[in-house]
Image 1 (cartoon, rainbow, N blue to C red):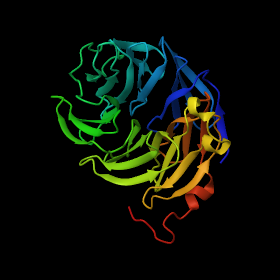
Image 2 (tube, one colour; image 1 turned 90 degrees about the vertical axis):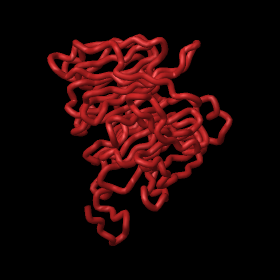
Image 3 (tube, rainbow, N blue to C red; image 1 turned 120 degrees about the vertical axis):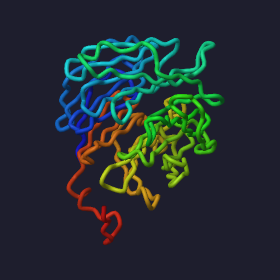
Length: 334
C-alpha cells in the first residue's frame, strides 16, 4: 500500500472529503486554501482561493457541482467545483466550524462558533441549484442555538428534517431542523469533546471520534452506542470503510504535549479496527504529526489522511485487502 504524498498545503490540514464517485479529493487547511486532487495519481487539479482565514471545513455535493466551505474569516462560501469560482458567500458574527450538505443537495447546515458574546448557532440554508448558483438567499431557513454544551460537529441525519450534532461535552444529539428543538440526546456518548462525525452511506448509523481516546458507532435513529473502539491516544477523526467491516481512526497527542511523552507515544498512525469485533487489525504509519482528518473513498478502494504536518496521504488498498476474509470463512450476504 504505497502512499501518494500530496504536498499542496503550507499549514496543518483541517478536513478532507472525497466526492461521490471517489475520483476527486478535496482538502482544506489553516493556510486559507482549498485544494482538489485526482485520487488515482495525486495530481493537483486546482485551488479554491478566496478565504481570508483558516478553512475549517468543506463538503461537496453528490453531483460534484458545488463545494461549500466554512472558515475562520466568519464566512461560508459556495464554489463551483468545475471552475473554482466563488459563487456566493454568507457572513456571520463568528467562525464557521462545520458545514454539510443534505442528502438531496438542496440544503446546507453549518455551525458557527460561540465567541465574544455570540452564542454558538446551527443554521440551515436552502441551496438554489437553478442557473449558475450565484443567486442564493442570505437568510437561513432555520437557525437555533443548542442550549448547554456547544455543538462542534453536525450533519443531516437519516431524515432531512433532523440535524445530528456532536458537542464539546461529548454529547451527541438530534435536533428538529425547523423548530430547533432537541428531539433526542445521549449526554454520555463520549467523556470529552467530539472531534469528528461521519455517517454510513445510508445514514442509518454513524461514527464519532473524541479526545477521550475512543471512537464509537451509534445508531442514528436512537443514538444508541453500538460499538466502542478504545485506543491510547486522543482521536481527531474516524471514518467508516464501505464494503469491508472496518473503521479507520486517526489522532495523536497535540504538539504541546508531544515533547512530554516517549517517542513511540507520538502515535501518528492511522488505525484500522474491525467494526464488528472491536479489535484493532492494523496500522499505517506516515505522518510526522497528529492525523487531523481521515476520509475513505465511497468506492472503498482507497483512503486519505490529512495531518498536522501539512501533508495529505492517499493510500490505494492492495489486492490482499480485498482478498482478506475479515470474518474467517463466513461469507456475508448483502
